[in-house]
Amino acid sequence: MRTIIIQCVLLFSATLGFAKGPTIAVAPVQTDKSIPPAIAEEYDAKIREIAGKSNQVISKKKTGSAMSKSGVSAGCATDKCGAKLAKSAESRFTLFTTVVNDDDIYKVSMTLYDSALKKRAGQAEEECELCAAREVNGTLASTFKSFSKALAVPAPEVKKPKVEKNAS
Image (cartoon, rainbow, N blue to C red; front, top):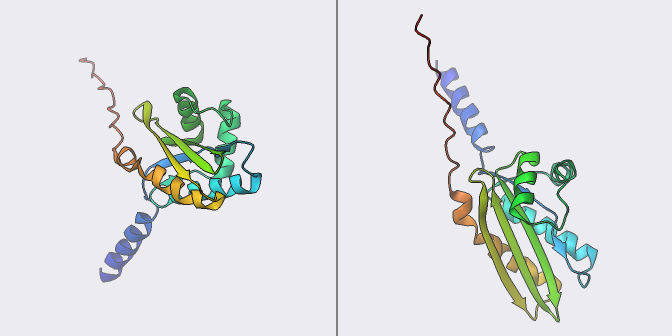
């Protein structure tokens, strides 16, 4: 009996590690031409890392496949694109991020779509003035943090329709 209890505790604790928050598909970060592709890739990796601290981030490969399958282009951040990508990626949330640079003022814009509530859960913008390109990582983190309340909202329960029994 003691062995069974220990095994149950171990199994339960192992499964807790997988339930790490809602699923989120992170679309590739969009940047303007003034930002080198290598830096854009760093931003993309950083936002995935930040989102992955408290959420289950859909892999980059699966997100890319879902974008192709659903017809969502890399630059689209509308609610319609959010809904399509979330459905195709089988995620609750979709995150779109844009970083633009104008004379060492980096502007980070993020849009979060919630497929369970069928609406935009938030939009946030922050600037990093007189920053070097790599200093923008802190701005990415603070911008994403503004979505913490939206990411914590539980999904509504889907009620199953009642089946009426035929009186025979």
